[in-house]
Image 1 (cartoon, rainbow, N blue to C red):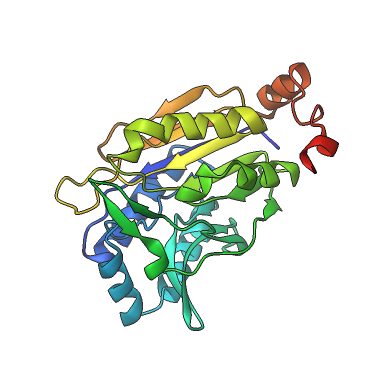
Image 2: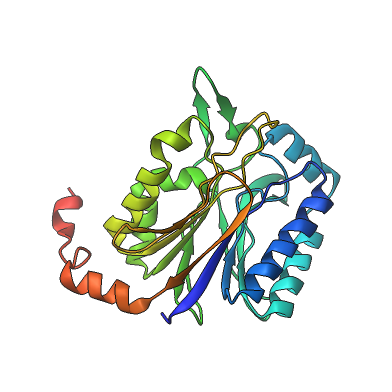
Length: 271
């Protein structure tokens, strides 16, 4: 891993998909102008997280044009871009899928959300499995910046997923996510900081900005967290771009002083 600047764009999606994508690219351009070499977008960055409406957009057209647009953006700006996530039709199934795009405009990594958010709270009922198929893979890619893995939102609640990526060499974990105003205040900081601490990796949590008129209100509070669990930068609920330096020296120092991954006793866990 090398030292570089990372940015998270906490955009506020509109119900006009084309306008949302255009505005997200404006934010990406601003982040790149400010020196960010890796830029992360939120989960379903182009529309409020209203699943029936997102599915309707997916039925109308696939997202190959959106992906091509983002690939051109990464190539033009010479950045690594985590394209948040998009509802992608693949054969007869629809996946909540994230892509990591290289400065050459090539797809380095894709991740399909593996754990689907089916919950029944008094204040909130969601059943993602009615819309999406779950992914079945957890992968890491080696890039010019470092080794990167991706999870999406609910995936972060399952420690095995992040640990598998860390054991595969991940140094940076990118997590496009839309926690809500029920789960966010309770668990957002706790979960993301814990995954950073227990795996001694950098974690970027990318949320959309809050839309008080949306049926599903995003929590906001995008963050970049270091391997010690320190929140290096955090957004509020409004639109913003947050930045932080990613430093391999800090990660190596923490792992050297507190070698958690080396101290694992795999023979116990197998039982």
